[in-house]
Image (cartoon, rainbow, N blue to C red; front, side):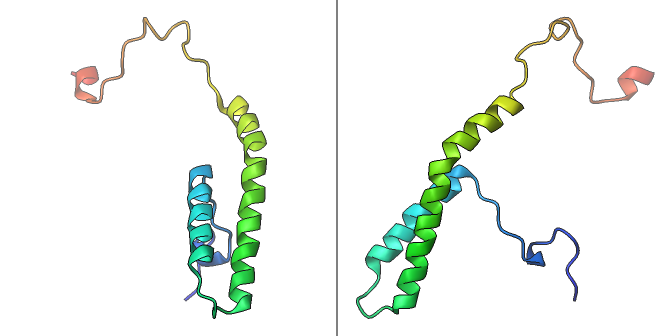
Length: 96
């Protein structure tokens, strides 16, 4: 069965929020600390590599976060908002 465009099986990276990355970093550090002495060195190296990647992403995150917040901020109030009547959810009020 083929995957449609945008499906998670399209080999696309999973996008995580800052909080999710911090949680994943904590979990990986706990995993590394709890590994037994006979754990495969390749597995240890892969966990260390992912920890280093996450730490680098989190170090760069404050700079990215501040620029994205500046772009997405909207004005808090508009001039006409206070006098505007709220929209009705029922259309029969408008037609009846």
